[in-house]
Image 1 (cartoon, rainbow, N blue to C red):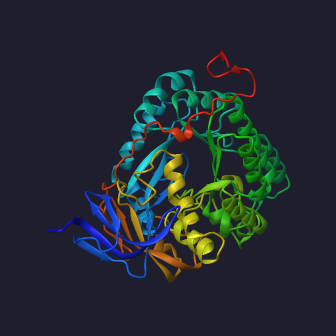
Image 2: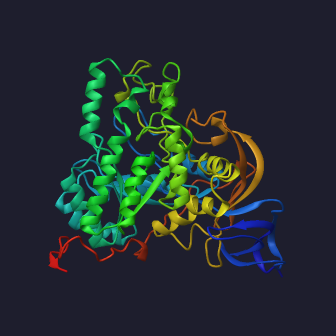
Image 3: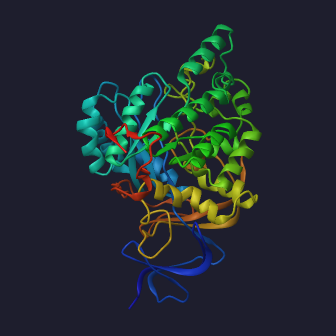
Length: 484
């Protein structure tokens, strides 16, 4: 009789701490054994010459989110999660948005309906655009208790941004409820000032998007949100850190003991502001916020990854087709940068690009790659130890890699619903050939096997990593109103 449902043999396993040769025995969708010469399985996979890595955990993905205006989010959960799995990712966290003036609970319920077609496992952050007292005190406690344990707030973008005063109320609520707040940190007033001056001067092409959002816009706001987190003794993650100066603000706060974590995205490690200056309207394909920076910023980000200041690298997948009545060019090829939808697609490209640019080129080692793409994210967002690692008792979410395979990235290879990829033509080394979720093969040799609806929602309970330190800058706890 077989000992296991599935055995993966002769592979080299990598976790965030070790690289070792072993077989993996899987029972009931979980890792049941690690060792050499395991007993037989009902099914077996020969991973000779291959790396076996934890499936990626991408904690910043915009999929099937409603928008106003002529453009649409190109992906459904079925197409977006197919793309993620093709690139070796087995878990995503997306965003349920509160409509301004509306209910957060309604936004979450509607997003659960959209996510029913997901092919891999998923969870949600809650985007708070209108943190009214009844939302904070009546809706959020129930939503957090039901497993939606992270908030997102914007400090820029009309229609989404909240004030500093509102941000403090959200942070205080997160502290009381045991939730983590993630922040899009850019100085709105500075952006508005720069933008108006650029438009008045007739400087409105895609490249001028980066001019409207220089690093000082991000650096100042990162400093400010770190101060808020320190003042309220509440953990935060700063989303999409784009360069060295912003990362340095996070490092300074970390050195003071503040629980602040930095995230960057694949695009900031490989693209620059020069990509926004491609001929004609092409630069719109690279238009995202914060804007891509410089090669010096790329080097600084890799260094911050090596130092552990930035511990999570995501795709910030935000797909808008380039052509057609709902794409980036919908408002015309001469549209000012202020009218072009922000965001780049990147679900399938994230892991292969980071492996090639990071591990193959010697910028990081293999355990660091596993940590920044899977393990740390799973820990930070309450998914570990089920997700993000290979250990007895963890879900058998695995990606089997050919580390030497050379691939030229194309839009068709991404298998999402977009009509382009900003990584078009990039030559990389290393590719995930087979992806498994809970022990089931969801992608094999580029063929998506998981049906829509195979993915499961991952509720997240309380966890130690995001507990407050119990330290305030003065003798008074402003959140609970007591002396300390």
